[in-house]
Length: 432
Image (tube, rainbow, N blue to C red):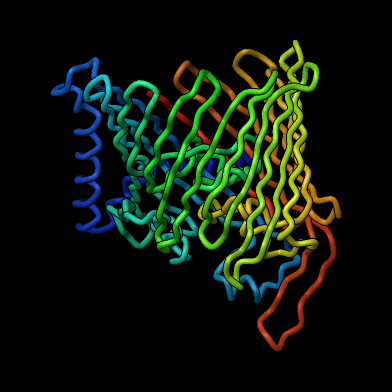
């Protein structure tokens, strides 16, 4: 990790040189910076009580390490190395414009500058970043050099209208129907990848949504979305309170399935208890039926220690891990869904966190399958340098079956259970 931090500092000093590799890159970078500056200072022409702009800037370095039991020829075929480094500068703007008491527009812009091993050696990396899952392509490569690229994504762009107990929203938005902490079978529109820790806002969907509020903890919501594959998700949700519990039921059309689900959130004594379950009934041969359920119990102690335990059952999941599973899990560009939020049939999650000082926190999360052929350790350390500046060191360490499928007619290599791969991250985040 010290090596990563040292490389991160050196990489930051080189970013200007990398981003000006050619004249086209210079022009596009200047345009991108000009647009961002114009956006940042756009409040000059708009009443201050009507618009809110916030965001952050991050510098993130990543080291990836792969077990040496992987055949070197397989790595060469994939154009990978046993250890490599990647970097990015991540800037975000959130713009909330209140046109009137009833009308509101929100735009969220994600700007990321990438360089490092994957940028220079894996064309598929840039392609995966540039892919927009929505029906409207709001993803743009503004700078496209040989060793660096600047990517901009509008992941929020919607208009909202409110009148009394009614709310109407159209555009790219976050539709959050999930209840549980890690895995969300109820989250039909915007499934979240837990390993993509650097994306706090979570992805949005191109959708229309209508909400009727019935009380302080009760509502009816109907939404419909279309993705880049022209697949439709259209469903309704009813939330209500019963005793000390918040409950919900939902149903509708999910891509090629009919979906019916329910969720809850409440307490077991002094501990929190929440969960959700969804049944998917496939309407086409290539879409099998599936049942998923997840639940979490968590507890916060008076000394700031927090512990949580969660479980996921996925009837369509695998009973045995292999090397390729871990690549899909750890890749932030991997699109998960409510029908497949994690690749294994039966998985436990255990998390704990402790505020050592008011400025320093440690978190440790673990995932493992009931077959004990998969184990994932995620430790992290967060330190608040100033009110607006935070530092983070985080690891994602994967253990499992080291099964390496080779191209036919070569045999599959099985090295047994052990260390598969690890990712280390060092990040500075400045919020404004």
